[in-house]
Length: 283
Image 1 (cartoon, rainbow, N blue to C red):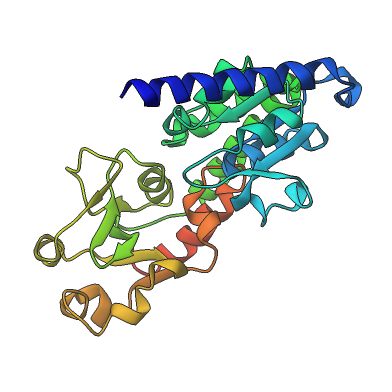
Image 2 (cartoon, rainbow, N blue to C red):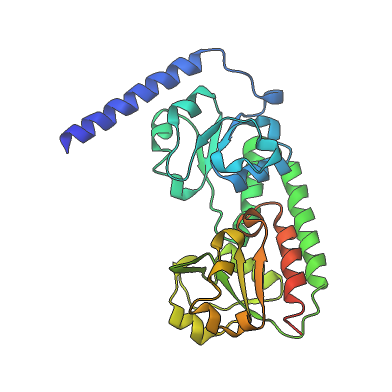
């Protein structure tokens, strides 16, 4: 145990030395005097691009390849780890991520880098993050304009619903074992905005495993999944084939997982897609 502590302390000291060396070198200046930013989460990267801070990005997550403004930027982290030395070498003024990455960025904090961890679990978090990123990046007015525009578009989409009832929707994140979302999740909020209801009303967690027997008792009006959940391939097996929604072909497959799952500035596109597909079910 003592040996591990010594090794950890040594690693932190070495990283701090690397940081000190980088800080004293000629780091490329931030555009227009604005801070250089490393983004460890694709949704935050999309937010930064949407408020005009794309040219301030110097490093991103490896899962940001589908974001046009992130193409060609150094990739500094994956789902489980952050390349600390690579981040330090990019001379960021701030590194943004989410609370679950606190351990992954601890070495960066010890090295003296500014870290800002933003929640992105709920619909409200989406707007809080845009507002916070506006302050961090120097784009306060742009972030406020974006929030106002997004909210106005959402209201317009909701006004187009005219549903006779609110159909229940079961979200399938994974089929074996079954994983779904709780009522406090971002995806659940998206369903509610689209005129539906999350079929799972009592789940305390945002994401959790769910039993096939409980799903059969629910008998939701529709199933919602992205292509990567491989739901279509499972429909011939239990419990899926015994669901009324499957027999009635009320299975909604989002072609772009990022659009459905990522709480970013494109959420209205997902909302529009959902409204159009729930409309015939809600008659």
